[in-house]
Amino acid sequence: MQTKQTTNEGLKRAYAITITADEISEKITAEIKKIAPQVRMPGFRPGKVPANLVKKMHGEQLHAQVVNDVIQSSVDSLIKDEELRPAMQPQINLGEGYEEGKDAELTVELEVLPEIEAPSVEGLKLEKLVVPVTDEQIDEAIQGIAGQNKSYKDAAKTKKAADGNQLIIDFVGKIDGEEFEGGKAEDTPLVLGSGSFIPGFEDQLVGVKAGDEKTITVNFPDDYQAEHLAGKEATFDVSVKAVKVETETKIDEEFAKNLGLDSLDKLKEIMKGQLEQQTAGLTRTQMKRSLLDTLAAGHDFEVPSQMVDAEFNQIWNQLQQEAAKEEDPDAALKEIEAEKDDYQAIAERRVRLGLLLSEIGQANNVEVSSQEMSMLIQQAAQQYREEDRERFIQYVQSDPMAAAQLRAPLYEDKVVDFLFDTAEVTEREVTAEELQAAIEAEEDAEAEKAKAAPKKKAPAKKPAAKKAPAKKAPAKKADADEKPAAKKTPAKKAPAKKPAAKTTAAKKPAAAKTTAAKKPAAKKAPAKKPAAKKAPAKKAD
Image 1 (cartoon, helix red, strand yellow):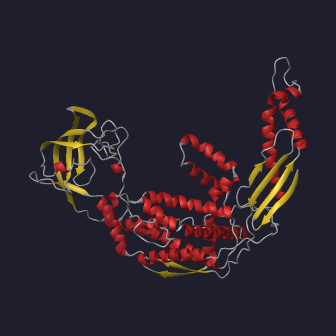
Image 2 (cartoon, rainbow, N blue to C red; image 1 turned 90 degrees about the vertical axis):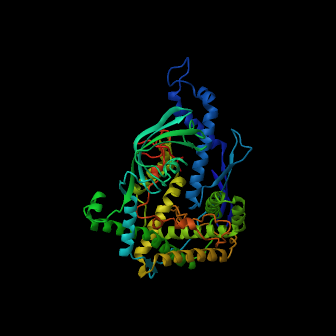
Image 3 (spheres, rainbow, N blue to C red; image 1 turned 60 degrees about the vertical axis):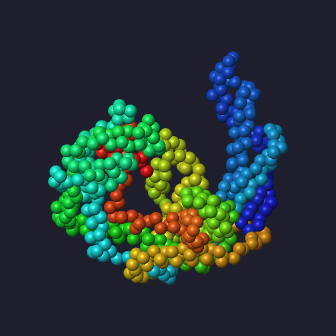
C-alpha cells in the first residue's frame, strides 16, 4: 500500500492510497485456500476441489469481498499511522476505472478534530437559582389530586341532571334498528360535560331524572377509530338508574389512606418532593446554560464543518417539522428561512461546546461505563418494533459512530455534572417566574453571541495533529436539552429562543389527569373508557 497526502488545510485532510494488484491477488489466493476445504463439487472428494475451479466458481464474489476488506484495512491503517482523529466517517472513493487485475486507486477525505487545550476547572463559579416549595403550593397540589378523585352521592329522585352531575346508566346502541357489537353496557358512570362520550350524547341527557328512559340519536365522527361505525347515525336507548351530585372531598387522614399512604403528612412529603423535582429540571437548565456561556466566552477555535452541518441539519429538520404544524405553515417556514444563518451559527456554537466538554471529560477521566452504555442501547431499542430491536442492538454494537452518537448526550451530562461538583456554587432563592425569565434571557444571549461570533477562515497548511486517536467520541450535542422549536408566525421571537427546552417536569401538574380514559379499548365499539364498561366515545386523541 502506498499513501500520499494531497490536502492539509485547517482541519481538512485528503490522501491518495494505492493498493497494488499483487496485494489484492495475494489476499484472494489466501481466501481461496481458506474456503477450499468447505467447497463441494461433483467428481471431487470433499476438500479436494482445485483452487482454479474454486476461483472460477466464487472468484467474482471473493474479489468484491477482498477489495472491500482491503480498503477498510487500508483506511484503518492510514488513521493509525497518521495519528488522525476523524470528526466524522471518512469519505472513501474508489476510482471508476478500477477493474480486477489493476491497482486500486483510492481517495480518502476527512476532517480531523481540532487540537484543544482543556481548560482548567479550578476557580469555576456558578449561581444556582432555587425555587423554594411553599406550604401553599403543597396544599394546591393536593387539592389538584382531590379534584381528580371526585366522589358523588345520590341526589333526590326529582333532581334533574345538569353538567357536572354523574349519571349511572344502562344503554343499548343501534344502527338501522340493529344492535351493534360493543354498543351495550350496564351501570356505566357518566359525568355530564366531561366529554367522555361521542359528541351529542351527553348533551341530550341534560335534564333527565333517575328512572327516566330516553332514546337519543347521535352521529359517530367521520374519523372514528372503528371504521364500521365511522360517520354513521346511531340511536341509544338509555335507562337512567341514578343521578348523583359531587360531594366535597375532605383532605384528611382518611383521604391519604384511600390513596394508599400511611398518613396525610406522608402525602405532603411526597408532594413536596415532586414539586422540588419539577423545578430542579429548570434549575439545571439554567445552570447548564450559564456554565456553557462561561466556557464559550474563553474558547474560539475552528470546528469541523461536517459536524456543524450535521448539527444544523438536525436543528433545521426539527424547525421544519414544528413549522408544518402551525396554522400557517408557509408563513412559519418563511420566518425560519429568514433566520437560517442564525441557526447555522447556533449549530457551530453547539459543536464547539461539545468538543470542549469532550476534552474536559477526557482530561478528568469522565467515562460512560459499559453497564451504562448497555442500558442506553436497550432503552433506545424500545423505540423499535419488537422484531427489529435485536437488529438495532447489533447495529449499534458493530458501528462505532452509531454508538458514539448514542453515547454523546449521556457523556455530556456526566461532564456537566462533574463541572457542577467542581465549581463553587452559590444558591439564590427566586420565584418560578424569575427562574423562567432567567432561562429565557440566557436563550436570547446565546443567540446574540452565536450571531456575533466572527467567521474564521481555515489557516493554510496546518500541520497534521500528532495525537493518538481519541478513545472517546466528542459530545456532539452541547445543548441537547435546548433544541429550538419553530416559532409561531405572529410572534417575533429571538432566533435562538428554544421553547422546546422548556418542556420540563415543572410544566406538568403534580398529579396529571390521565388521558387514558379517552382511548377506546381495542375492538370495543363506541367505548372510550378503558374500564370494563363500554360506552359511546370520541375518537382517541
